[in-house]
Length: 303
Image (cartoon, rainbow, N blue to C red; front, side, top):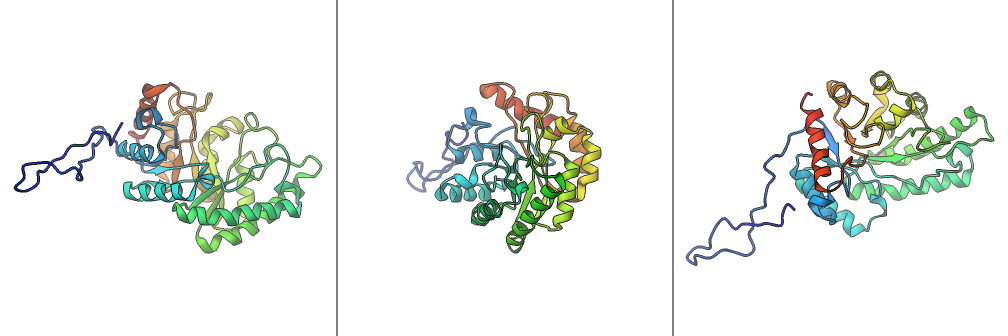
């Protein structure tokens, strides 16, 4: 594990002995300079780095990664949030998304138009703002919840747009962006938001710099395919990407998606945001973690 082996490089003057306070940090010898800001998550490299979140962040940075995302950040203790933020700042890791609210996976909330549910959502957004500031996060994930089978889709869309307009008014003064994530029908059946054109239409209707799209490449390969053309069509409303190959939702090169070409397109457009590595490892233990790193080196080197 990195940072466990320390070597003192300079003796104390006149004493011929080593200080026990000054350490030279062990560095990775194969650090890669990535062309895009890929963001691992906690647990992805725990066999190398251990279970401590700070050690994991340091390991990510040692491998050349320049970003990090954490869906569960809002639920972590404030002291840990602050410590993680300090480590990210020190190591040059940008903070990616965290989930801003409780997601209604099996019943409607924002699509329903129910005022109490809207108020609940807006309260979550208010509480997420100090978390975002604490960890230097610009983006937070929002999922509008389950479809309302008792209402026409046009009414549901109007309800969702109104909720997002009110949330945007809360976020705009702080420069924070909620990113709407369409999710595929197979993993998450019955959700209101499932396709990139739908997300694009909603963002255009909300018309706020604080309401954009999280384009999850794994979900959209299953839901709609036609990845690069849909990214191109939605480009001016996309603020964030997430990654996962299909089938399996593992690292690039393990499935059917040509991630080299997808990343080439994203890079060619001058994308300066973060690409979250929201996937599992295809192989267990340290070998599997190294395979993840190697996969990103492989697909990134052609950009």
